[in-house]
Image (cartoon, rainbow, N blue to C red; front, side, top):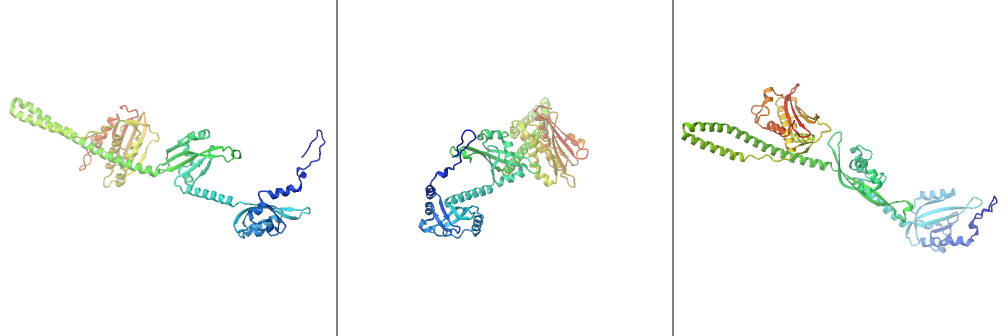
Amino acid sequence: MTALTRGTSRKTRVHPADDLPPEVYRQAVDQADIAISITDPRANILYANAAFTAITGYSAEEIVGRNESVLSNHTTPARLYQEMWTHLAEQRPWSGRVLNRRKDGQLYLADLTISPVVGHDGTTTHFLGIHRDVTELNRLERVVRNQKLLIETSLDAAPVALVVLDTHGRVILDNQASKKLVSDVSAKEPAYFVLDMVLPEWRETLADDPARCAFVNREVRIDRRAGQPHWLSVTASVVDMHSDCADSYFCGTRQPALMLVINDVTDLHEEQERARAAALKLALIDEERNAAIREGLSAALYRLDEPLNMMTSAVHVLQRREPGTATVLDEAVRASRAHLEQLRQVIPPAPPESPASVNLNEILRDVLEICVPRMLAAGITVDWKPTPLLPHMNGRPLQLRMLFKALVDNAIEAMNTRGWSRRELSVTSSVTDERVVVCVLDTGPGLDEDTRLRAFEPFFSAKPGRHLGTGLSRAQHIVADHGGLIDLNPRPGGGCAAIVELRIDGDPI
């Protein structure tokens, strides 16, 4: 030990090992729980401790004097031995793993370290070999590697994106599906993009309390510049892991992580949207049919009331001149009115629909999707220009869909004329003075002043020989029910412009 005296004088440094007798070194090597052997420069064994004999199965008497090569299974690559002898020739220690054979023929994997012992003259006098049986350790390492490979392969083959974040928000694990999302979401790290949309404050929450970041099946819509929107379903759960720091060996420090499972549900949403559109189309067709029956019967009853009113007046006149004839005619009028009342009772009632908060852009999109087959069949191109930010308004969704479908159907009918080449439909929405304005523009033949004034009459059609309908008349009633305005105007370049104005607050204009 080193002893320092006060002042500048110091005693001679004495190494503690100088006080140990040589026998202690011998006993330490003999009793060491690791295989130790000493060889001459040709690798002939001069000494082997008890651990060496226990691992190899050879006794000291059997192994001393023999070459270390007696332990080799001769399947270790030759290049490994060449590397070993190169190191030893340069008086550098060498470490590596070799496959050995015990005395009973059993193979084991040895983790071997050889150090040259250099004499005073600078030459190598002996080699000190230390090795341990790492067969079980190697097996466990292989098991871990195989499991890791199996997990990675399974994760990469999974159809869902998996991302694991530590409490600092760093990605510690992801799979191939998550990397494919980079192009879909146009973000360097899809996990950050998704979390920003679902849980904007996730960074602070993850650091303080990861459990608050857990959620199940939150859906995210990604609107791409071209094509249909992209839908993702996201689930976040906390994974309990343990710290790999040395100071956590005994205390097992908890190190939670956040695992995100991101599933592409675009196909499911598209299928649901198709089913919804089909159901909506059926509902509109059913309501249009009932409305046509309702309005047709109502109009017919109204027309039949006119001659009955005239006959009633005639009865009053005849009662003074010919009472008998008047009585018979009065009975006929009463019977006719009773029949008309019975007919009025079978008119299908309008379905009750409560006002709700609606977005006209969504209403218009639904109508255009429903009308796509007709427009394709007629060769009509559509220019759909919705205003990006359209406020919600109070309205009846089904009635509003019928309104705009009637306008689109009227535009299609106008352009679907033999020999008419220019077939373009433009639908726009905008906000002006607390009003939502929707314009349906076509490039058909247009309309004259008489047609414009009579367009909203029931059963009016500008095309002779065509079915007489109540679409525009019904559209006018729907607009009136919503307190709005509707107008048809000829376009300067040809065609017709149907303009609907509705107040955002639902009050009449």
